[in-house]
Each structure stands twice: as structure tokens, then as C-alpha cells.
Length: 119
Image 1 (cartoon, helix red, strand yellow):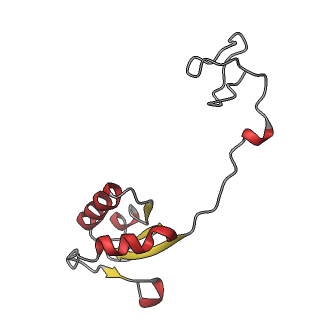
Image 2 (image 1 turned 120 degrees about the horizontal axis):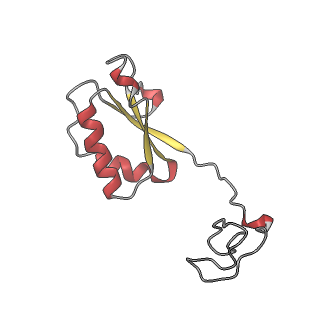
């Protein structure tokens, strides 16, 4: 049994959704299945400094930007070998660049720019 609104699954003995207060259905319609979408990400910078990563995360999260650090935990295994690369949604990349442009992140091997520029 499923709720047609919130799509929660219930055991067969239930007939109403506890959250939405609507009658449950035996199966969700095919259109109720979420369709995954591809989101393009763009590299903004690379760094080896965990303090920089923490600062950057707090700034991006405060602005509601979607990002991840590729290789963030790998830098602890091979320090200075491969930087953690900041990846931001392509449609939010310019906003992220503007937000980070005023930071002094020159402590250890940080590099701002695209992969083509040696990031």
C-alpha cells in the first residue's frame, strides 16, 4: 500500500496515510517514479589544506550552492599528491567563483581555475 501524495509505503493492513490523511492505493502510477536527471559539475579549485576545505564548505552551504569535494578524504592517505577538487554545479559555478574570489587560500598548494589551467 502506498500514499499517492508522499509516496510512503505502508503495510497491507493500513488504509490511510498518517502524514497526508489520504486513502492509500495498491500501487503508485508509473509517472510517480522520479526520473533521475544529469547535473553537470565544474571544477572551481584544488587544495591540499583541510582548513581551506572546511572554510569553503561553510561559505558555499551558507549560500545554498550545490557542491562536493572530489578526493577530499584521499588527501589524508596521500598528502600533497592529489588535491581535493571543489566541484560545483555548472549553473552555480560563477556564483561560487565570485564568493571565493576574496579569500586568501594560499597556505598550501591551492589552485584556482579550470583543469586546463593546471588545477
